[in-house]
Length: 414
Image 1 (cartoon, rainbow, N blue to C red):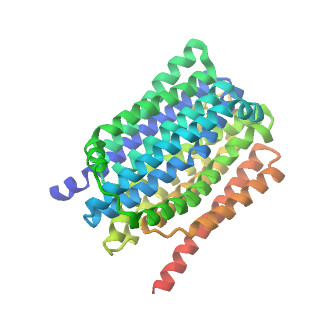
Image 2: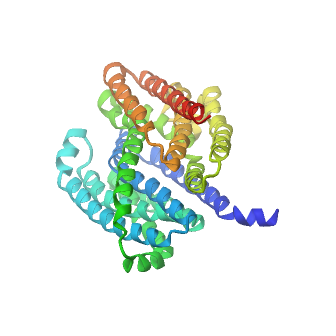
Image 3: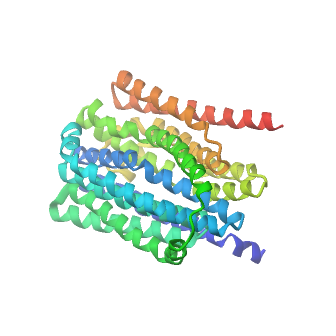
């Protein structure tokens, strides 16, 4: 029993650390909802929505890096791991610098088109550069099962974002100050990630590149990009469009629902981290991958599902408690949005599972769902509740498609 506890201690720490980071992250959202006016908070919500959409490559990097690192580790292919780290460290660093500079140069155009603060949009470029580098390191820690360092980096980022952001808002910098805190936090967490990976990077620097591995790795990164870009769009496109499609006060109410929905969506994120690493490792060894998936789905249903149910039953009590009394209309939206967030939290597990197994055709289904959601939002989102219902319908349909994909695969395998 004691040996089993030690074996899983890293995963347990990651779960606890990620939960703590989520609490700090939710604290940031809750504090900002109170410190900023509703229309300002809607701007901050849109900025984070854009950041997640434009930094999708960082999510691709983390998931694909974790899968490949776990695969090389499971097979004891140390030379291949070193070659992989050397190749992709150069590619990620160069690509991150180029994309970050492009966003910074276009910040004036983007700010004008989306009615957002120019300084915060300019910071998106720097934030993207830092996020790309950070998530490459985070993916290595995840794939190598260095869960203690991974959890510590996540806590450092969430804590710094809250502390720095609050101070800058209180001194009068408003939305720009809040977003500057997020940028500074990623820089700090990048330092934390670098500490345990320095020996690996030193070893990779002198490695001999195995050319035959390169095309397979590149193809996997590209397919992962399709899957994760679609997922990011599904979970954030409504936040980005809310400012354009809704009246300012309605956009503020919808931002409150998004903030509460993040509790449902992101609370079990550590389960997805663990599931991807476990699935990639067991699949590489030819072992069963479904047991971990079922446990993960059951856990998220029992935890995030309980929160979503509370949003349905007692929204008038929870909304003032979480985001404040200045968002009274949020109570009419949060139940619907909470169920949509639950469906998307479960979808995240399916994506971790499929990426861990290297089965990327699910990306086509997700891409179709994005198109459907975008069309419905642009044509039917007349008010916050209508927008939330659109997100819910698409989330449930996408969940059904993921289950069907799994069922068909199992039937063919049988």
